[in-house]
Length: 261
Image 1: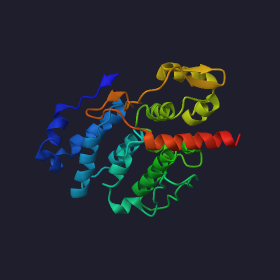
Image 2: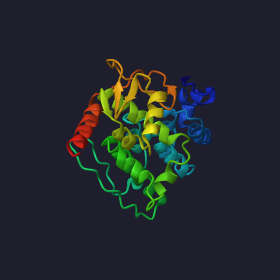
Image 3: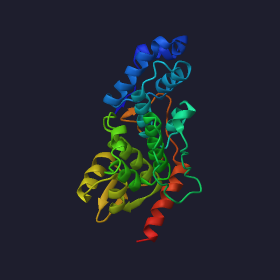
Image 4: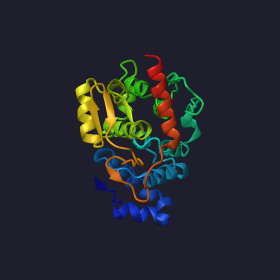
């Protein structure tokens, strides 16, 4: 496990009035690119860049906005995506509204991304992906991401190195927190693996306290609290992430799957 270390230049910007100076915009934009290629993640720096875009729209880069939103997907169920979304200009949100996971058992339809503004369309698609994660609709998430009829979804996250594995790790953490055992077929579907052998390899690598036995993935001992590692790094001051509310959604989805088999 690597320890998160913010570059000194970025730390200086965030801890001073420089964070409100448009001259720092290129530095923060380049830092987003670095996060995408290196697997690191810095929410505060990303929000600072979006805040600068609110003040100074001239240097705004579409790819930086898309990459910030894509990176924030990889740390669900943290509210990072919503935090970033609320700093965007209202015009980018168009007519599409994210679906709340609370009280909803249906999977929303993909948004009609028909705006003439390509960035607005991209934000709609990423917001839809976030809604699927919030609903624990993981099979639908992977299906949309690999969709042949709308390749834009895959393109939107293409710059984020290790995106799929980062999502898998967050799903894995949620499953481990919510259940003492689950079917290997469920793991295949939720983690987007084509074979049971791939699931077994993932469990061996990413879930040391779990084991595959027959058609089940079982916990070896009583679980304690689940700590989530963000993109392979321990975030400063993050501590343990509580999955209490999200785990109820996971259990409900899993139990519903079992009832319909």
